[in-house]
Amino acid sequence: MSRFKGTVALVATACVAIVGAAQTGRKDTSPPPSAAVDTNVNDPVARLEKRLETGEVSFSYEPGHGYLRAVLDALHVPVSSQTLVFSKTSFQYAQISAAAPRALYFNDDVYVGQVHDGKFLELASFDPRRGAIFYLVDERQSERPRFQRTASECVKCHVASSTRGVPGVMLRSLFTKPSGFPVAGMRSFVTGQESPIGERWGGWYVSARGGAKIGMGHAIVSGVEYPGEALDTSAYLTGSSDIVALMVLAHQTQMHNLITQTNYRTRLALSANGGTMAGMSDASHKQFEDPAEQLVRYLLFTNEARLDGAVAGDSGFSHELAARGPFDSRGRSLRQFDLHARIFRYPCSYLIYSETFDAIPQPAKQYIYRRLFEVLSGADQSAEFRTLSAEDRRAILEILVDTKPGVPPEWRQCVRVPRD
Image (cartoon, rainbow, N blue to C red; front, top):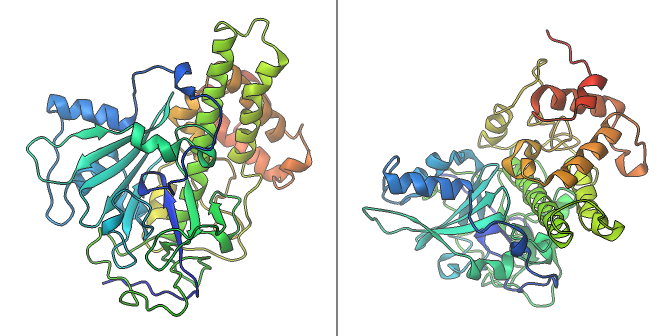
């Protein structure tokens, strides 16, 4: 039996993607971007649903966990990615408390949440062109379990300033009442890789080895008895809420949003210009080049909060993620961790390999590749990229040339990757 004990004199709460967001409504005032994309979806869950319909795959029901394990297996989502959050901002809030947190699991493209004794599994799945698509799975045992798409209910929170105005995901940290509901007027945080550790993980349980700092994790309200004073995790797939998984989650959620924002803005600019780049105004170029520039900087971790000590998880998540590769001829990978001064050994996001990145329209893709080459080749030595050493830049460029299909020819001309 694993147990988490609180140590901080405040309670905070957090939410991410399908785990729930505060009901603040949409803050972005731009028109919905859906007009610039196709109506059909091709995300991992949609593809899995087609396989269910044809009988190619089926789900086994497990007492105590319902269809959770079957869904994770079918979507290739690792159990080791489990994190636990006791926010009451999910629509299934009645079943959520500090003694019964929600569990969240994720891979590069999909987020899966389960509320203990809840009615539905909650999923956010990334379509290469449309961004986050939201689904539910009825937790009751059925002969034909299915994914139910939920659009209107979710976009109230998941198309907002915290998701950069596109269908996306976010990890939030905010103060709550002892009941778990948000405290009105209190400051909240949207967590990304730039967030100081001290502002992260309010309302999340955090498990780690070696005395790593856990920020606002496991927080307790001063003067209020904590339910049970510790958490019994025997009802969950694992006893962990892994700190490394939480750090990767903080990076990945905003990286997804930046990719989707760049995709949408480019399609809107092209649509307004008759579907062509010919004669496009400087203002239209700026419409997609601005988010593309933000994407490049985030992709290269230029604003990453530095770690001030070693970090180690306890679930095996870091080993599983690092083992996925792809690896270059020297055995290097963008998924390899540092976890002393920063998250990854080579500061370039592994989501550059994702379908969502590959689906960015060509005008923005060309801009991104040009800017990446300027930085990684050393031509751009501006202050924004000062955290990237010459060694980092060279290593990332070599890894991408060796592992990323479709990089521009000049990259390969610049770099000869030795073959051992």
